Length: 359
Ligand SMILES: Cc1cc2nc3c(=O)[nH]c(=O)nc-3n(C[C@H](O)[C@H](O)[C@H](O)COP(=O)(O)OP(=O)(O)OC[C@H]3O[C@@H](n4cnc5c(N)ncnc54)[C@H](O)[C@@H]3O)c2cc1C
Image (cartoon, rainbow, N blue to C red; front, top):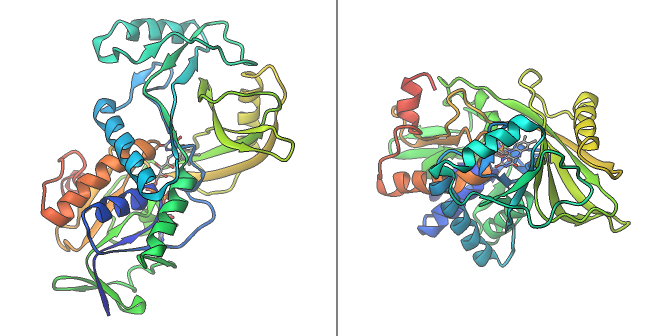
Protein backbone atom coordinates (compact mmCIF):
# COMPACT_ATOMS: atom_id res chain seq x y z
CA UNK A 1 0.00 0.00 0.00
CA UNK A 2 1.51 3.37 -1.05
CA UNK A 3 1.86 6.05 1.68
CA UNK A 4 1.32 9.79 1.31
CA UNK A 5 1.41 12.76 3.66
CA UNK A 6 -1.93 13.99 2.33
CA UNK A 7 -4.70 12.79 0.03
CA UNK A 8 -7.00 15.50 -1.37
CA UNK A 9 -10.48 14.65 -2.61
CA UNK A 10 -11.67 17.10 -5.28
CA UNK A 11 -9.77 19.17 -7.82
CA UNK A 12 -11.65 22.46 -7.94
CA UNK A 13 -10.28 25.80 -6.79
CA UNK A 14 -9.94 24.54 -3.21
CA UNK A 15 -8.20 21.26 -4.11
CA UNK A 16 -6.09 22.88 -6.85
CA UNK A 17 -4.70 25.61 -4.60
CA UNK A 18 -4.22 23.20 -1.71
CA UNK A 19 -2.27 20.86 -4.00
CA UNK A 20 0.15 23.64 -5.00
CA UNK A 21 0.50 24.83 -1.40
CA UNK A 22 1.42 21.26 -0.38
CA UNK A 23 3.88 20.86 -3.22
CA UNK A 24 5.58 24.13 -2.28
CA UNK A 25 6.42 22.52 1.07
CA UNK A 26 7.61 19.26 -0.46
CA UNK A 27 4.71 17.21 0.89
CA UNK A 28 3.94 13.77 -0.62
CA UNK A 29 0.51 14.25 -2.14
CA UNK A 30 -2.23 12.39 -4.00
CA UNK A 31 -5.28 14.13 -5.52
CA UNK A 32 -8.44 12.19 -6.40
CA UNK A 33 -11.10 13.84 -8.56
CA UNK A 34 -14.20 12.41 -10.23
CA UNK A 35 -13.77 14.63 -13.32
CA UNK A 36 -17.32 15.92 -13.65
CA UNK A 37 -17.73 17.94 -16.84
CA UNK A 38 -19.53 20.72 -14.95
CA UNK A 39 -18.48 21.97 -11.51
CA UNK A 40 -18.59 25.40 -9.86
CA UNK A 41 -14.88 25.87 -10.53
CA UNK A 42 -15.03 24.69 -14.14
CA UNK A 43 -17.71 27.19 -15.14
CA UNK A 44 -16.72 30.11 -12.87
CA UNK A 45 -15.71 33.35 -14.54
CA UNK A 46 -12.85 33.68 -12.04
CA UNK A 47 -13.45 37.38 -11.44
CA UNK A 48 -11.58 39.07 -8.63
CA UNK A 49 -13.43 42.30 -7.94
CA UNK A 50 -12.47 44.90 -5.30
CA UNK A 51 -16.02 46.18 -4.63
CA UNK A 52 -19.32 44.35 -5.04
CA UNK A 53 -23.06 44.94 -4.90
CA UNK A 54 -25.09 48.06 -5.53
CA UNK A 55 -23.51 49.69 -2.48
CA UNK A 56 -19.97 49.07 -3.76
CA UNK A 57 -18.88 47.34 -0.57
CA UNK A 58 -15.16 46.63 -0.37
CA UNK A 59 -14.37 42.93 -0.65
CA UNK A 60 -13.60 41.23 2.67
CA UNK A 61 -9.88 41.59 3.59
CA UNK A 62 -9.01 42.56 0.04
CA UNK A 63 -5.71 44.19 1.08
CA UNK A 64 -4.48 40.86 2.50
CA UNK A 65 -6.06 38.41 0.08
CA UNK A 66 -5.35 40.14 -3.23
CA UNK A 67 -1.51 40.29 -2.99
CA UNK A 68 -1.51 36.74 -1.67
CA UNK A 69 -3.64 35.48 -4.60
CA UNK A 70 -1.59 37.40 -7.18
CA UNK A 71 1.75 36.11 -5.87
CA UNK A 72 0.39 32.56 -5.60
CA UNK A 73 -1.02 32.38 -9.15
CA UNK A 74 2.07 34.12 -10.57
CA UNK A 75 4.25 31.45 -8.93
CA UNK A 76 2.10 28.65 -10.43
CA UNK A 77 2.31 30.40 -13.81
CA UNK A 78 6.12 30.32 -13.56
CA UNK A 79 6.09 26.65 -12.47
CA UNK A 80 3.85 25.61 -15.38
CA UNK A 81 4.84 28.14 -18.05
CA UNK A 82 1.15 28.95 -18.67
CA UNK A 83 -0.50 32.37 -18.08
CA UNK A 84 -3.97 32.24 -16.52
CA UNK A 85 -4.11 35.17 -14.03
CA UNK A 86 -4.96 38.30 -15.98
CA UNK A 87 -4.72 41.57 -14.03
CA UNK A 88 -6.57 44.51 -15.53
CA UNK A 89 -8.73 47.27 -14.03
CA UNK A 90 -12.45 46.46 -14.09
CA UNK A 91 -15.00 49.01 -15.26
CA UNK A 92 -18.09 49.81 -13.22
CA UNK A 93 -20.87 51.60 -15.15
CA UNK A 94 -23.47 52.96 -12.72
CA UNK A 95 -27.03 51.79 -13.34
CA UNK A 96 -28.71 54.75 -11.58
CA UNK A 97 -28.18 57.84 -9.44
CA UNK A 98 -28.21 55.80 -6.21
CA UNK A 99 -25.24 53.75 -7.32
CA UNK A 100 -23.39 56.87 -8.35
CA UNK A 101 -24.15 58.50 -4.98
CA UNK A 102 -22.81 55.39 -3.22
CA UNK A 103 -19.61 55.64 -5.21
CA UNK A 104 -19.20 59.32 -4.32
CA UNK A 105 -19.53 58.48 -0.64
CA UNK A 106 -17.05 55.58 -0.85
CA UNK A 107 -14.57 57.62 -2.84
CA UNK A 108 -13.91 59.94 0.10
CA UNK A 109 -13.42 57.10 2.59
CA UNK A 110 -9.75 56.35 3.49
CA UNK A 111 -10.30 52.57 3.35
CA UNK A 112 -11.18 52.90 -0.36
CA UNK A 113 -8.11 55.03 -1.16
CA UNK A 114 -6.56 54.15 -4.53
CA UNK A 115 -9.39 51.82 -5.55
CA UNK A 116 -11.18 54.16 -7.97
CA UNK A 117 -9.75 55.78 -11.10
CA UNK A 118 -11.34 57.80 -13.88
CA UNK A 119 -12.20 55.79 -16.99
CA UNK A 120 -9.72 56.78 -19.69
CA UNK A 121 -11.39 54.70 -22.43
CA UNK A 122 -15.14 54.13 -22.16
CA UNK A 123 -16.38 50.69 -23.23
CA UNK A 124 -17.74 50.93 -26.76
CA UNK A 125 -21.32 49.77 -27.35
CA UNK A 126 -22.31 50.17 -23.69
CA UNK A 127 -24.45 53.14 -22.63
CA UNK A 128 -23.35 54.92 -19.44
CA UNK A 129 -25.87 57.73 -18.73
CA UNK A 130 -25.00 57.71 -15.00
CA UNK A 131 -21.23 57.61 -15.51
CA UNK A 132 -18.77 55.07 -14.25
CA UNK A 133 -15.36 54.43 -12.78
CA UNK A 134 -12.42 52.05 -13.06
CA UNK A 135 -11.78 49.66 -10.17
CA UNK A 136 -8.36 48.49 -9.00
CA UNK A 137 -7.03 45.98 -8.18
CA UNK A 138 -9.03 43.59 -10.36
CA UNK A 139 -8.24 40.39 -12.21
CA UNK A 140 -9.66 37.41 -14.05
CA UNK A 141 -8.44 33.95 -13.21
CA UNK A 142 -8.94 31.57 -16.13
CA UNK A 143 -10.09 28.84 -13.75
CA UNK A 144 -10.48 26.12 -16.39
CA UNK A 145 -6.91 26.75 -17.55
CA UNK A 146 -5.58 26.80 -13.97
CA UNK A 147 -7.28 23.46 -13.27
CA UNK A 148 -6.07 21.92 -16.50
CA UNK A 149 -2.41 22.81 -15.92
CA UNK A 150 -2.70 21.71 -12.30
CA UNK A 151 -4.12 18.33 -13.33
CA UNK A 152 -1.38 17.87 -15.94
CA UNK A 153 1.29 18.86 -13.42
CA UNK A 154 -0.01 16.38 -10.84
CA UNK A 155 -0.39 13.62 -13.43
CA UNK A 156 3.17 14.08 -14.64
CA UNK A 157 4.35 13.50 -11.05
CA UNK A 158 2.07 10.47 -10.48
CA UNK A 159 0.14 12.49 -7.88
CA UNK A 160 -3.30 12.26 -9.50
CA UNK A 161 -6.03 9.61 -9.84
CA UNK A 162 -9.39 9.98 -11.58
CA UNK A 163 -12.39 8.43 -9.84
CA UNK A 164 -15.02 8.96 -7.20
CA UNK A 165 -14.21 8.28 -3.57
CA UNK A 166 -17.20 6.43 -2.11
CA UNK A 167 -18.14 7.68 1.34
CA UNK A 168 -17.81 6.40 3.92
CA UNK A 169 -17.08 2.86 2.67
CA UNK A 170 -13.79 3.66 0.88
CA UNK A 171 -12.25 5.19 4.03
CA UNK A 172 -10.82 3.28 6.99
CA UNK A 173 -9.59 5.25 9.98
CA UNK A 174 -6.33 3.91 11.44
CA UNK A 175 -4.38 5.05 14.51
CA UNK A 176 -2.08 7.45 12.62
CA UNK A 177 -4.14 8.38 9.56
CA UNK A 178 -6.47 6.83 7.00
CA UNK A 179 -6.38 3.93 4.56
CA UNK A 180 -8.28 3.67 1.29
CA UNK A 181 -7.97 -0.11 0.68
CA UNK A 182 -9.85 -0.05 -2.63
CA UNK A 183 -7.34 2.53 -3.90
CA UNK A 184 -4.27 0.82 -2.38
CA UNK A 185 -3.18 3.98 -0.53
CA UNK A 186 -2.87 5.41 2.96
CA UNK A 187 -2.07 8.90 4.30
CA UNK A 188 -1.65 10.94 7.45
CA UNK A 189 -4.42 13.28 6.26
CA UNK A 190 -7.45 12.93 4.01
CA UNK A 191 -8.71 16.41 3.08
CA UNK A 192 -12.08 16.88 1.42
CA UNK A 193 -12.31 19.75 -1.10
CA UNK A 194 -15.68 18.76 -2.52
CA UNK A 195 -17.52 22.05 -2.90
CA UNK A 196 -21.27 21.66 -2.43
CA UNK A 197 -20.98 17.84 -2.75
CA UNK A 198 -19.74 17.93 0.87
CA UNK A 199 -23.34 18.41 2.03
CA UNK A 200 -23.63 14.59 1.72
CA UNK A 201 -20.26 13.85 3.35
CA UNK A 202 -20.96 12.01 6.64
CA UNK A 203 -18.05 13.82 8.36
CA UNK A 204 -18.93 17.34 7.17
CA UNK A 205 -21.99 17.73 9.33
CA UNK A 206 -23.14 20.48 11.70
CA UNK A 207 -22.83 23.28 9.12
CA UNK A 208 -25.71 25.42 7.89
CA UNK A 209 -25.53 25.75 4.11
CA UNK A 210 -26.88 28.58 1.96
CA UNK A 211 -25.87 27.23 -1.48
CA UNK A 212 -26.80 29.24 -4.57
CA UNK A 213 -27.22 27.90 -8.06
CA UNK A 214 -25.64 30.19 -10.65
CA UNK A 215 -26.17 30.30 -14.39
CA UNK A 216 -23.88 31.99 -16.89
CA UNK A 217 -23.90 32.50 -20.65
CA UNK A 218 -21.10 32.50 -23.15
CA UNK A 219 -21.90 34.99 -25.88
CA UNK A 220 -20.33 36.16 -29.12
CA UNK A 221 -20.55 39.93 -29.59
CA UNK A 222 -19.55 40.78 -33.17
CA UNK A 223 -17.35 43.87 -33.36
CA UNK A 224 -17.15 44.28 -29.57
CA UNK A 225 -13.54 44.39 -28.38
CA UNK A 226 -13.29 44.99 -24.64
CA UNK A 227 -10.39 43.40 -22.72
CA UNK A 228 -11.65 44.61 -19.33
CA UNK A 229 -14.38 43.13 -17.17
CA UNK A 230 -17.36 45.47 -17.27
CA UNK A 231 -19.95 45.54 -14.47
CA UNK A 232 -23.32 47.10 -15.22
CA UNK A 233 -25.89 45.27 -13.13
CA UNK A 234 -24.42 42.12 -14.69
CA UNK A 235 -20.80 41.48 -15.56
CA UNK A 236 -19.34 40.87 -19.01
CA UNK A 237 -15.93 39.23 -18.94
CA UNK A 238 -13.62 38.40 -21.85
CA UNK A 239 -12.82 34.70 -22.24
CA UNK A 240 -9.74 35.26 -24.41
CA UNK A 241 -11.39 33.04 -27.08
CA UNK A 242 -13.06 33.71 -30.46
CA UNK A 243 -15.68 31.79 -32.44
CA UNK A 244 -15.15 30.47 -35.99
CA UNK A 245 -16.19 33.86 -37.43
CA UNK A 246 -13.52 35.63 -35.40
CA UNK A 247 -15.98 37.26 -32.95
CA UNK A 248 -14.73 37.56 -29.39
CA UNK A 249 -16.46 35.39 -26.79
CA UNK A 250 -17.49 36.77 -23.39
CA UNK A 251 -18.88 35.24 -20.22
CA UNK A 252 -21.97 36.97 -18.88
CA UNK A 253 -23.42 36.39 -15.45
CA UNK A 254 -24.57 35.43 -13.14
CA UNK A 255 -27.91 34.44 -11.66
CA UNK A 256 -28.51 33.48 -8.02
CA UNK A 257 -31.16 30.87 -7.22
CA UNK A 258 -31.42 29.41 -3.73
CA UNK A 259 -34.36 27.09 -4.46
CA UNK A 260 -33.40 24.73 -7.32
CA UNK A 261 -30.09 23.17 -6.34
CA UNK A 262 -29.14 21.34 -9.51
CA UNK A 263 -26.71 21.92 -12.36
CA UNK A 264 -29.35 22.21 -15.10
CA UNK A 265 -29.33 25.42 -17.19
CA UNK A 266 -32.89 26.79 -17.40
CA UNK A 267 -34.82 28.83 -20.01
CA UNK A 268 -35.67 31.26 -17.19
CA UNK A 269 -31.99 31.79 -16.29
CA UNK A 270 -31.07 32.32 -19.92
CA UNK A 271 -33.89 34.80 -20.44
CA UNK A 272 -32.91 36.80 -17.35
CA UNK A 273 -29.29 37.08 -18.49
CA UNK A 274 -30.22 37.84 -22.12
CA UNK A 275 -32.56 40.63 -21.04
CA UNK A 276 -29.99 42.19 -18.75
CA UNK A 277 -27.30 41.94 -21.41
CA UNK A 278 -29.56 43.44 -24.08
CA UNK A 279 -30.19 46.47 -21.85
CA UNK A 280 -26.42 46.90 -21.35
CA UNK A 281 -25.33 46.70 -25.00
CA UNK A 282 -26.16 48.75 -28.08
CA UNK A 283 -25.00 45.96 -30.43
CA UNK A 284 -26.42 42.46 -31.06
CA UNK A 285 -25.01 39.30 -29.50
CA UNK A 286 -25.71 35.60 -29.74
CA UNK A 287 -25.52 32.91 -27.11
CA UNK A 288 -23.05 30.08 -27.77
CA UNK A 289 -22.98 28.44 -24.33
CA UNK A 290 -25.04 28.20 -21.15
CA UNK A 291 -23.95 26.53 -17.89
CA UNK A 292 -25.15 26.15 -14.33
CA UNK A 293 -23.48 25.01 -11.11
CA UNK A 294 -23.82 25.43 -7.36
CA UNK A 295 -21.76 27.86 -5.32
CA UNK A 296 -20.63 26.29 -2.02
CA UNK A 297 -21.88 29.02 0.33
CA UNK A 298 -22.21 28.49 4.08
CA UNK A 299 -24.65 30.60 6.12
CA UNK A 300 -21.73 32.08 8.05
CA UNK A 301 -20.28 33.25 4.66
CA UNK A 302 -16.65 32.67 5.70
CA UNK A 303 -14.80 29.64 4.34
CA UNK A 304 -14.09 26.76 6.69
CA UNK A 305 -10.80 24.82 6.95
CA UNK A 306 -9.35 22.34 9.42
CA UNK A 307 -9.76 18.86 10.83
CA UNK A 308 -12.30 16.84 12.75
CA UNK A 309 -11.34 17.05 16.44
CA UNK A 310 -12.44 13.41 16.95
CA UNK A 311 -10.54 12.17 13.83
CA UNK A 312 -7.72 14.65 13.13
CA UNK A 313 -6.73 12.69 10.01
CA UNK A 314 -9.92 13.90 8.30
CA UNK A 315 -10.03 17.53 7.19
CA UNK A 316 -11.85 19.99 4.95
CA UNK A 317 -11.57 23.11 2.86
CA UNK A 318 -14.97 24.45 1.87
CA UNK A 319 -17.32 27.43 1.85
CA UNK A 320 -15.46 29.45 -0.79
CA UNK A 321 -18.81 30.89 -1.83
CA UNK A 322 -18.73 33.35 -4.74
CA UNK A 323 -15.07 34.29 -4.23
CA UNK A 324 -13.08 31.10 -4.65
CA UNK A 325 -10.47 32.72 -6.91
CA UNK A 326 -9.53 35.30 -4.30
CA UNK A 327 -9.87 33.19 -1.14
CA UNK A 328 -8.43 29.80 -2.14
CA UNK A 329 -4.72 30.80 -2.27
CA UNK A 330 -4.76 32.39 1.20
CA UNK A 331 -6.71 29.68 2.99
CA UNK A 332 -4.99 26.78 1.22
CA UNK A 333 -1.65 28.07 2.51
CA UNK A 334 -3.05 28.51 5.99
CA UNK A 335 -4.46 24.97 6.02
CA UNK A 336 -1.19 23.54 4.67
CA UNK A 337 0.80 25.24 7.45
CA UNK A 338 -1.65 23.80 9.95
CA UNK A 339 -1.50 20.23 8.59
CA UNK A 340 2.25 20.04 8.08
CA UNK A 341 3.58 22.27 10.89
CA UNK A 342 0.73 22.56 13.38
CA UNK A 343 0.35 26.34 12.90
CA UNK A 344 -2.98 27.39 14.49
CA UNK A 345 -5.88 28.34 12.22
CA UNK A 346 -7.75 31.64 12.45
CA UNK A 347 -10.76 31.08 14.72
CA UNK A 348 -13.12 32.62 12.11
CA UNK A 349 -12.44 29.75 9.69
CA UNK A 350 -11.37 26.94 12.04
CA UNK A 351 -13.52 23.83 11.44
CA UNK A 352 -13.52 22.73 15.09
CA UNK A 353 -14.64 26.14 16.38
CA UNK A 354 -17.17 26.75 13.62
CA UNK A 355 -18.81 23.35 13.95
CA UNK A 356 -19.26 23.99 17.66
CA UNK A 357 -21.10 27.20 16.75
CA UNK A 358 -23.38 25.41 14.26
CA UNK A 359 -21.37 26.34 11.17
C1 LIG B 1 -22.07 30.60 -12.18
C2 LIG B 1 -20.93 30.79 -11.22
C3 LIG B 1 -20.06 31.85 -11.40
C4 LIG B 1 -19.00 32.04 -10.51
N1 LIG B 1 -18.15 33.08 -10.73
C5 LIG B 1 -17.11 33.27 -9.89
C6 LIG B 1 -16.19 34.33 -10.11
O1 LIG B 1 -16.32 35.10 -11.07
N2 LIG B 1 -15.16 34.49 -9.23
C7 LIG B 1 -14.98 33.63 -8.18
O2 LIG B 1 -14.01 33.80 -7.42
N3 LIG B 1 -15.84 32.62 -7.93
C8 LIG B 1 -16.90 32.43 -8.76
N4 LIG B 1 -17.77 31.41 -8.52
C9 LIG B 1 -17.60 30.63 -7.29
C10 LIG B 1 -16.53 29.56 -7.46
O3 LIG B 1 -16.91 28.77 -8.53
C11 LIG B 1 -16.43 28.73 -6.17
O4 LIG B 1 -16.04 29.56 -5.10
C12 LIG B 1 -15.37 27.64 -6.31
O5 LIG B 1 -15.40 27.07 -7.58
C13 LIG B 1 -15.55 26.53 -5.29
O6 LIG B 1 -14.50 25.61 -5.48
P1 LIG B 1 -14.43 24.22 -4.71
O7 LIG B 1 -13.14 23.61 -5.10
O8 LIG B 1 -14.73 24.44 -3.27
O9 LIG B 1 -15.67 23.37 -5.27
P2 LIG B 1 -15.95 22.66 -6.74
O10 LIG B 1 -15.59 23.58 -7.83
O11 LIG B 1 -17.35 22.21 -6.64
O12 LIG B 1 -14.96 21.45 -6.76
C14 LIG B 1 -15.19 20.26 -6.05
C15 LIG B 1 -14.50 19.12 -6.78
O13 LIG B 1 -14.62 17.94 -5.97
C16 LIG B 1 -14.99 16.85 -6.81
N5 LIG B 1 -15.61 15.83 -5.94
C17 LIG B 1 -16.66 15.99 -5.09
N6 LIG B 1 -16.91 14.84 -4.43
C18 LIG B 1 -15.98 13.93 -4.86
C19 LIG B 1 -15.72 12.56 -4.54
N7 LIG B 1 -16.46 11.88 -3.64
N8 LIG B 1 -14.69 11.93 -5.17
C20 LIG B 1 -13.93 12.59 -6.09
N9 LIG B 1 -14.14 13.89 -6.42
C21 LIG B 1 -15.15 14.56 -5.81
C22 LIG B 1 -15.94 17.50 -7.82
O14 LIG B 1 -16.13 16.69 -8.95
C23 LIG B 1 -15.17 18.79 -8.12
O15 LIG B 1 -14.19 18.58 -9.11
C24 LIG B 1 -18.82 31.16 -9.41
C25 LIG B 1 -19.68 30.08 -9.25
C26 LIG B 1 -20.72 29.88 -10.15
C27 LIG B 1 -21.63 28.70 -9.96
